[in-house]
Length: 216
Picture 1 (tube, one colour):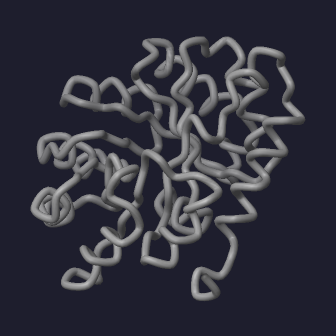
Picture 2 (picture 1 turned 30 degrees about the horizontal axis):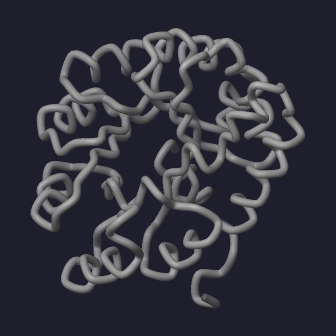
């Protein structure tokens, strides 16, 4: 269910926020725009508590219309914390077979990070549901296409540097999803509690992710 939602939505919103007190209205704005996969990162120690609250109280997540996960997971201990907090999927910036194994044992979707073809293949062979290609900023869409040429069975999610100008090129290259953080969450809009602005920006990304990649 979780991976199917991500593959269908093709967009994971990365909420890497210093202050999670506004997480509820930000979540509502993103969901209203049509985003259905939310990743709260462990760069904020409050992320597990926020995810647990979302799982227990947010109607869209409780009804499985949207999924919530935890990112920036860098160790087995953090993977355990994330899963204990109710994360429906785990995202890591690194290649860790130990994290992948633990997630698979607990039947939680896992999207480990990788950069080189060897790291990507290692993640996939270990059981990754989707491999997060990170950072994709300097690699570009051509890299995704080149990696998929000899390994077309991979499910790749470029993250880092994806924006409205290049998102279509990543999908055209064969990416199954993209992760977007700072480009999606305007800090000024959040500071001003301008939720309409967040909805507008998120809607633009949702629309871009729904475009027929073959038309690019």
